[in-house]
Structures are given as C-alpha cells and as structure tokens.
Image 1 (tube, helix red, strand yellow):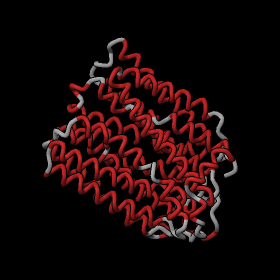
Image 2 (image 1 turned 135 degrees about the vertical axis):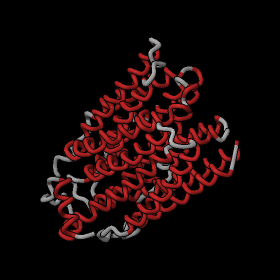
Image 3 (image 1 turned 135 degrees about the horizontal axis):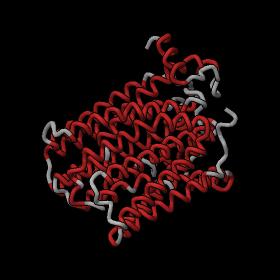
Image 4 (image 1 turned 60 degrees about the vertical axis):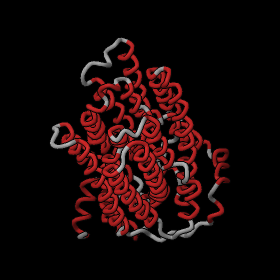
Length: 426
C-alpha cells in the first residue's frame, strides 16, 4: 500500500506515532504499513470468527441438522480449549523460526479450509454424522487457531509500538463487528431461508480467513534470532514460581473464563425460543464488540490492568443481574436475554483485549512466546475442566452456574488490582 497513505491513516488512528514504542529504527519505518496490515488481517479473522461463532451460529446449525445435544454440547469446549491447549507444544517450533508471521498466515488459511468444510457438511449431512464431522472440523480449526494465537503476540510486539498495540486489536474488533451486525440484520429481517443464510455465512468466513492469510504474509517482519526450542515446553511451568506477576495474570484470566462460557447458559434459561432468537443474539454480541472494542483497546494502551479490573466488574454485574432477574421471574420478558448478552459481551471484549495487551507488554521479546504458550495452555485446561464441571452443575440448576460465573468475575477484578502497570514504561 502507498507509504504516505499508510502514514496518514496511522497518525490519525494512533495519535502518538512519534513514540518509538520499543521498536528499532527499521521497524519504526515499516510500522505504519504493518499497523494497517494488522488491522486488515485481524478484521478478516475476527469477522470470520463472528460468522462461525460456535456459541450461537454452529449451535443453531447442529440443532437444525438434528445432530443432538451431545454434539452441540461439545462445540464450545472443543473450540475454546482446542485453541489454547496445544500452544505449549507448538511454541517451540515457532520460537525456532526467524519469521513468525508464516505461522499466523498458515493457521488462518487452515481455518478457512475448515470453515469451508463445515459449510459443505451442513449442506450434505444430517443427524449425528453431521455433528461428528462438524465438531471434528471445528477441532482442526481450533488447532490452527492455536498456532495463530501462539505466534501473533510475538509478531505484534515486533512490528507495532508498545503504546499502539491495543489500538490495533481494538480497531480490528470494531471493524469486524460491523460485518457481523450486517449478518445479524439479515437474520432478523428474514431475507431468506435461515439455513441458507447460515451456510452462506460459513462460506464467507472461509473466504475472510484466506484473505487474512494473504494480508499477513505481506507483513514486513524483522528477523528474530531463532530461539532454542528446548527452552520452551513443559519446563516453562517453572515460570509460575519465578514470576509471581505471570501467576497472578493467569489466575485473573482463568477466573474470567465465565464471560466466554456463560452465553450458552443464557439460552438454556429459555430453550423454547432459542432458535428464534439467533438474529437478536448475534446482533447483541456484534453490537457490543462494535461499541466497546476500540474503547477497550485505547484504555488497554493506557492501563491493561485497569481494563481487566473493569471487565471483571462488568461481567460480575451482568451475571449477578441475570441471576436476580431469573429469581423474580423477569428473565422471560421480551428482549431481556439479548440485552443481558449485550452487556456480557462488552465485558468479554474487555477481557480479550485487556489480556492480550497486558501479556504482550509485560514480557520482553524473548519471553513473549513462552509466556503466551504457558498462559494459554493453563487457561485451556481450565476451560476444558470448568466446561465439564459447569455442564454437570447446569443439569441441576442453570442459575447456579451463572451465579458461579459471577463470583469468578468479581474475584478476577480483585486479583487484577494487584497486577503491575506494565504500560508505565512505554
């Protein structure tokens, strides 16, 4: 892209482009173009995520195909834990490479192919067979996503300045939300058969992931000194003893998983109308991302610690309100669940952007890969175990599960207060 155009947009969006942000001279010169490539690639990837959302879209599709509750129940745990658990084992290969952008680009391309496969399965299969194939493809997609996650923070840290990373991710989230809102409006306005619209959305997701891969491949990434792969792996658990801030950060992240796990339980409060609310729920989720992501990103560049605190407070407040509304019988009122989901997704966006910015800024270049892999692997285990335990509790009482999520969010807010202000030395 033209360098002058990139600089103009970069200066207007960031407002503090004069600061080095920890980049060397060559990286600073390439930063405007790289900044826009990050936004473009992340926007495509995040839009694809919204179009294929397992919590809403794929759950609806499997229900429509008659796959059964077993396969529907596997969607969120497979997607979330599969994207995190493998990172401790894939990171050594990433760290040994002088250029890490190719891992993100390759992972994005694989996600695109899997999304296309899910669309084909939705068109040609039914029942448990459809469920098995779609969950399997989602598992492969999640593994590819784990490679993207393990490589991205290092790539971002090498190519975008410290005070501008949250802005890039927040801007991309807001841009992607516009596309997801358009998808939600199509569903709400009944512009065609809902199954056809969902399949078309899956095919669009595949295209956006492939485009994002191509965009990231053009990034001007500085060469890294390949790291010894033997230094990253199971032995990285020793970091939990040597770095108490990392341990606290992981504890905060683990307690905040309720913001990701809670939405399906909102649907279970009124399962009779869940299928008819798909458009409203997608709209609520996307609108929350649109109105909050850029703000969360800017705030994260000032204090990711405070963002994690505020997100925990917001999540705890929304979840507590849902429990209270359930107890007094108002949860069944029209629009209550979409509005509650809107509030929860605002908190969730703060969690996503705050945790990403905090981890990148708290670690030096040589530490980002192991810190990312270790924290994601542990949180993936928490998601897998917690998902199963909460599913068992939910069989007895859905409001109790939501109340437990609320307590976790309040606890996370308290723990986040003890995190360091890692942006202080930007």
